[in-house]
Figure 1: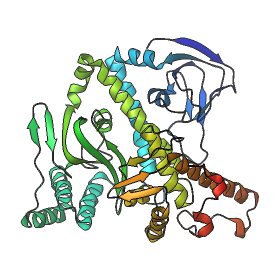
Figure 2: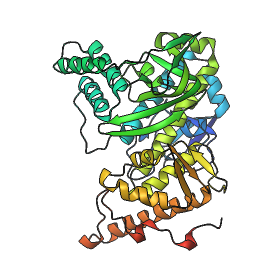
Figure 3: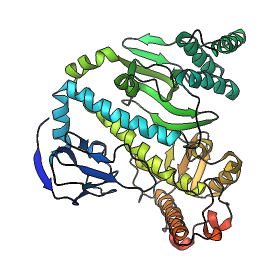
Length: 431
């Protein structure tokens, strides 16, 4: 990799701060160690880095604020590269590109799992059981074609396990009802998927990544009985790269929205593709960095105890994902229904009806089928900031006074009374 500019830091020196907007540089450690820290409740994929490690990559490539604070753990020297210089260096070395993509794909997978699986909920013991349970979840949810996809994959992968008999029985019952797995059609190099068709499901092997040529793809993380929408991908977006660079099963489910065309790239073709089209390396790296950044801030938002705070912070994050200025006063429509917002914000089922009423009562929000319009993003940002500050102050009070009356309630059980649900008028900007 090109060396770039070299910078030396004394032990204890801060290299950059979390949320710092200047993020145009990538750092490669030549000697010494650095320590990463930040949002206190969030577990980190990496906390100590040494020679050869890279940091600052994610926020630099997606041009977002820094995700962490980095401090020199010892006296250290780093090569510092600008965004374009870093990409040029990686594009010139396909083997290095594959290693870098694999490294950061593992980081994204780790954060995906942190976001989607509550720490106090143990999942089924292995991929076979998880795939079977996913099929049963689809049956219970009435998604028969999805269920048949999952059970067909299960029977192909695990023909002789205890769950196979039940999988075969359920698949046969679905077929007898006339349920079919929609076929994909080839259109040149692209594959066409119909509306609602599964591209792949969690826990099945992955041998291809996909580039969205047209249409949209919904990426879901399913932990029965919960479904979480991770992202909606559009033309030019890349997905499925985690499995082909790490040789691990799919960790999310991809579903076509409307008629969709995808360009598949097989694992064995990846190196050749990098050599033939170096720009693809930049696209994959940028795609991973964007997903990693938004997965990480979603992980942060999940630690707020009040479900209303989580809902408003989620909407604020989605505005940032769409690169909508939080100071804008122009209406913005996002592809999120109220049920998806509540699910992504991890609002407990018993509290969803009350919180849904609060959100629909907000004059700054209007809901249609699988859509929400934010009339004034600056007002939403003010509300989110107010709720975050209130939760933070409540946490500090709890730390200062551990008496039973001042202890915070467990996540999801905070009462939604009138004081919890309203922002004082002086905290909101003028329209």
